[in-house]
Length: 456
Image (cartoon, rainbow, N blue to C red; front, side):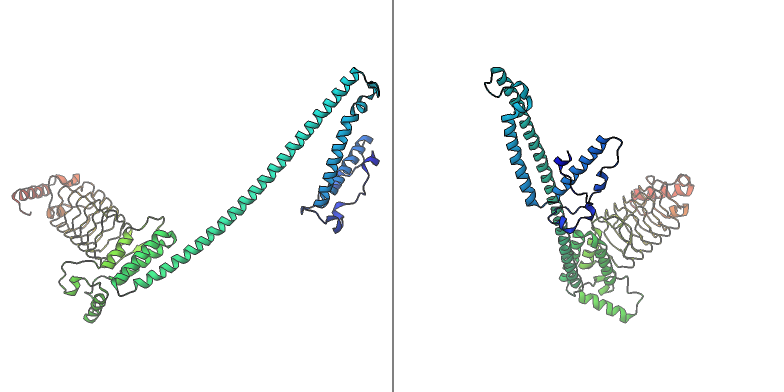
């Protein structure tokens, strides 16, 4: 048995020389072949089996370390030997396997039956072996194809990721170039170029979420610089310089030019910048927008404009048209909203403390939870606005039209305020004030004046 297998030297594979590794395709670390070495066993047959296993493992390892050309030669020789051996087995196999029952010469029919049966079994065995080899080869080919496919997919994903990164870098470079050009246009003295710069920034904001905050900050700074509130507190020379600068840039309002204070209108570039801010894309965790102390008198925005949670402290929004505009949570303390159109506006939770809303129209507006502490609502048409939860402490309600208004759950409303306002039976008042004699008398007086076409 040992001579048939051919004992090889029990060399330690981990101590093999570099020459033994030439032509090897594998870079894997060597296995622990010493675990297969035969050790002392209780029975001789166990020791012999261990010896055979070690010799087989040793031969397999030697074959794996052969060069590809040597492997192909060995495989070819093995196939030739297998074919020759199988042919010899078919030819002489019946006598080798069952020679005691077969004649060498003068064969009889019974011998033919035995020979045919043995050869049929050998053919079936050979066909089974060939089919098994075919299945094994197909399985190996399938595994190789899967590995190639996975490798190609990894390469494709890597290439696509690189292309995506390159495209992103290219796009970022283009956005930067567009941003620089837009800023240059924004600083021009020509109105058309400034409008072009504003709408270029709008396109950048729509195309790049990362630049959203930057564009909004640039536009708000532009508005604050171009339209600060009033010149009334400055010196005559400073006012003259400011008016001259606005006239040169095409931003001078008619009511500033002649000092009449009539017909305020917002310059086109400021109106465009405000519209871009009002119709900005919705993003999560937006940075605060600062438009405090800006002169936006005469601004015009349509339904769908979003000015929620913006700081309009001490801003001038006189005669502004903000119909159906979203102003939720906006900080409008000390702002001027005289004669503003706020019909259907959403002013929930807005801060209007100390704001001047006299002469404005807020009919059908939502003011739930709004803070109107100390606000001037003299002559304001409140109409069917909802003031549930609104704070009206110290608010000026002189001649305020509350026809159809909901003040049932308003906070801080007093009898003195209601006596100065225009209230009717359609006005929903707090339960503790509705039955007050002075309130009822005021309602009767307003109803009578309404019937006579007079102003109460």
